[in-house]
Image (cartoon, rainbow, N blue to C red; front, side, top):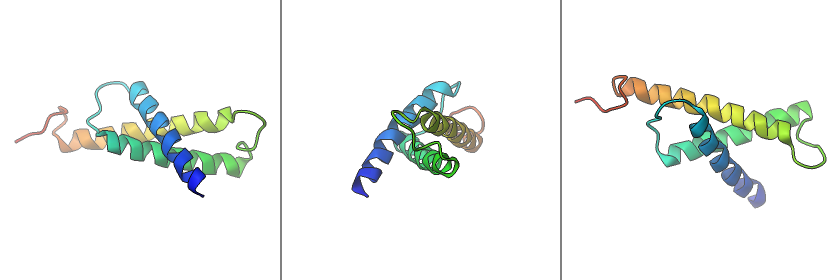
Length: 95
C-alpha cells in the first residue's frame, strides 16, 4: 500500500513535469498543482491499463506509461486553460 502511494507520487511528478514540457505555451500552474495533475493522471492511467489488461506485462509497461502521459497532457492543458480564463486570457492577473 505504501509502495503504491510512493510510486504514484514519483511517477506522477515525472509525468506531470513531462506534460508541462509537452503542452505548448506558458502554463500558469504551481508545482504542487502540476504534481496533483500528474498523480491523478498516473492513477487513472494505471486503472485504465489494468482494466484492459495492459498493466501486467513482462518488463516495462510502456502502454501504461504512455497512457499516463497522455492523460497528464490533457489534464495540464485543461488546468492551464482554466487558469488562463480566470486571469483574463493574458496569463497575467487583472486588477
